Amino acid sequence: MKPGDDDTPSVELRTDVPHPARIYDFLLGGKDNFPVDREASLEIAAVWPNLPASMRANRSFMQRVTRYLAEEQGIRQFLDIGTGLPTSPNLHEVAQSVDPAARVVYVDNDPMVLVHARALLTSAPEGRTTYIDADLHDPQAILNAPNLRATLDLDRPVALSLIAVLQFVTDEDEAHAIIDGLMKHLAPGSFLALSTVTADSAPEEVTRGIDAYAARGIPERIRDRAEVELLFGDLELVDPGVCLVHRWHPDAQSAAVPDEHVHMHGGVARKRG
Image 1 (cartoon, rainbow, N blue to C red):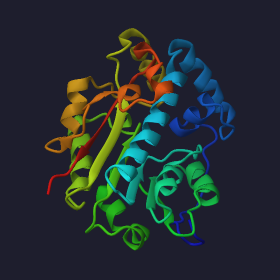
Image 2 (cartoon, one colour; image 1 turned 90 degrees about the vertical axis):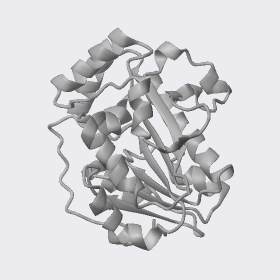
Image 3 (spheres, rainbow, N blue to C red; image 1 turned 180 degrees about the vertical axis):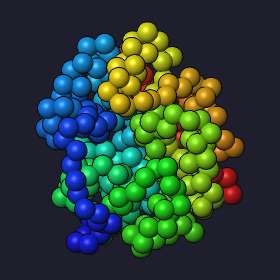
Image 4 (cartoon, one colour; image 1 turned 45 degrees about the vertical axis):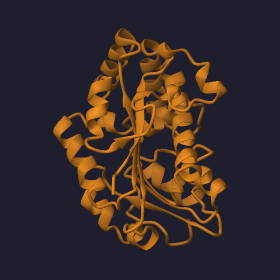
């Protein structure tokens, strides 16, 4: 990110309400959270004990997917929506380790994420990163943002990343509309990478955890594998298709994680020409 490379609203941190990005940060051992987030995290983890392990598996999935798309598919443009608080290695660090000229647009609408993105999501000199403060529920505003248009060439393939964000879209018709509203404007050869919460591997634990989130004003939707497959529509799924995220092109560390500890389905698919 270069100076001025963000759409900059006024920043008003809500320290009295728990936020998913800050809960995620706390459970991964981060420090960018408030007492209300820590209290909620501990209460949620008490009924969802494998949540931190699942979060780590999901973070590793993002990194493997990004490397795969950059190394094996030649993607040099990434649009990451639902960025969350920066945790190194971030998406742009993975992509730019393959090609320093890679370009990344991060999108989120949490003020604390914005503050940290400005400070930490710094591009390699050859490439570019930018941050857009925008809402996933308004795809057109994301695509029309001046910084996105200045950073990405939508006539060339883009990897759209929706990692651990669609569980917060609880209406299924809206989830499909969001994906379709974004993908239809991306060039043939673009990719969609997504992950979202499932209870397939641990039904009772995940259901208790989702209820605990909802009790703190954070509703989420659980999807089974078939429902996640439907999110990809007519895109061409990359082998092995939709699976628990630690089973997607696993490295040795991911392969060693028990299925019952991972509560995210994920996959990658290509937009045909």
